[in-house]
Length: 81
Image (cartoon, rainbow, N blue to C red; front, side, top):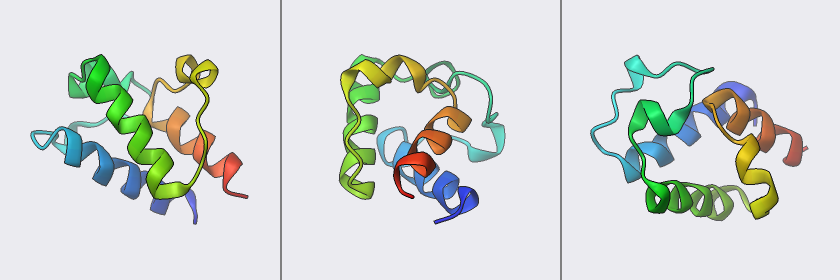
């Protein structure tokens, strides 16, 4: 799966948690939680959904590094190789 496909799938997962999300307004390098207004529970649900969709374990110690859309896509891409 290339970065573009990963990005699309990540956005799809985000939209399932935050249906009001306007993809056109997303900036790849800005904090997702601020752009999408996700609370802690929404963020955890997002990370669990990523795990379920991609089969990638995301340890709690890695959560702090998953800030922007780019961070999430890069993280997944590195672990799906």
